[in-house]
Every structure is written in structure tokens, then in C-alpha cells.
Length: 265
Image 1: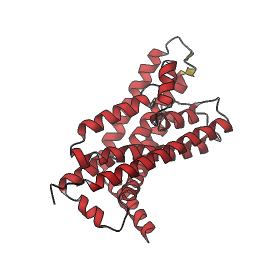
Image 2: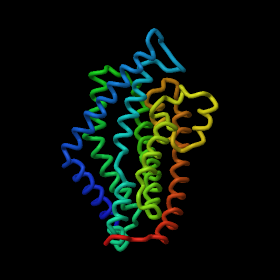
Image 3: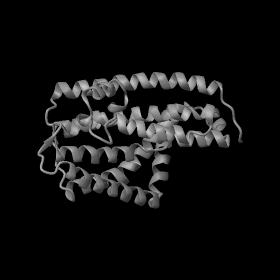
Image 4: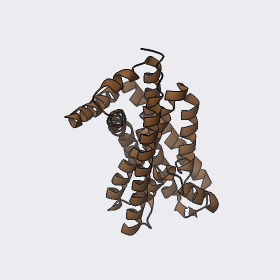
């Protein structure tokens, strides 16, 4: 069955990532350094202030530190692997397999994400809780948060996949990927909490899918004001964006694969 094959791809991707211990160590300590920097940076921002823009220092730091962990977890480089396959000519082999190419990449991404979670995000979370003494409002919101993170993973994948499809036309996507990372991190509130943005800019960002990747799950896990109706609406918004980006990615996939040009092989 194809389902078994897809899960085999996820398992293979997971095992490959786990075996790269040096990559794990460098990424983990790099993420830890970043978390330490934002801790002291935002401590200086909050000096003498109990609350800014509706957030306490603990909420702002938890929000940004978790954003860093989510970003690291989502970084599976789908678009880079797609571009490399185009340049090498291996993309032809992928299309001859009895598997949907997008689902193939999705399950590979899921395996890589699970590896990143166990080896990088989870240890970082433990450091936040026990070293930085970060306090999170854990309750029923944890269940909503887990669902929200899974939906955010799909959104992140669809965006990366569409960027990868650009390599069918441009072959080199370094500049596009760099611009994508900067735009997503900024417009999603992952670099600065969205409550710190001007009201008009917050409204603008709310009409984009990026805030559904970071802002929504982070708000669910850090906000004290959300209740079941707010959680449900947040997940509904993410679900709508998942459907929109899925449809868009399938349309772009159909168009890109009709214009494929292979230089390698």
C-alpha cells in the first residue's frame, strides 16, 4: 500500500536526521545562544516596566523563545532538496515512482520535523523551563497548541514547497529562500510579537497566512485571555489557510511539472 511507503519515507528521513549528531549539536547550541540573547535583550526592553503592549516580560520571552524553537523544528529544507534534485536530474526518478511527489516531500518533512523536535526543540524547551525559569500557562490550551502546531507545520511545508517549485523555472533559489525566511519570520510575529506592531500593520498581517504559522500557536500557549471559543476560531483560521495553500500548491505543482527542464541526469 502507498500509505506504508509514505510512512517508510518519514521513518527514513527521521533516521537520517538523527544520525547527524554534529548538525544537531551545532543547531542546538546556536538556538540556545539566540534564546540567551533575546532573554537579555528583552530584559533590557522591559527594565522598570511590568507590562508592554499587553504582554509581561515572561510572556514576551516565552513567546519569542518558543518561536525560535518552532522555527528550528520547521526547518527541514524541503525547497533546497527540491532545487538540488532539479539540478542533479534526480527529479525524473521521483516522478517515475508510484507516489505523489508532494506527499512524498510532506512525509519526508514530517520525519525531519519529528527528529528536530526530539533533538533540538524539546531540549531547548527544557532549558527554558528549568534554566530560564520560563512560566507557561499550561492547561487545556496545551491540546489546542499541539493541534495548532500540526496545522502550522502544514502551512510552513506548503510555503516551502511552493518556493521549491520555483526551482523548476529558476534552478537557483538562494535569494528567494532568504527573502522567504525573512518575510515569514517578520510578518508572522516570530521576530517581534505582533502586539508590538502598529495597529494598522497588525491588521495587514492578519490577512496573510504567515501569522497562522507562529503567532496563532504561540498566542494559544502564552495568552491568559483565550477561552474555548477563541481557541476554536484560531484553529479554524489555520484550517482555512491550510486548504487555501494546499489548493494553491497543487495548482503551482501542475503548472511547474509541465515546464520541467533537466540539465543533469
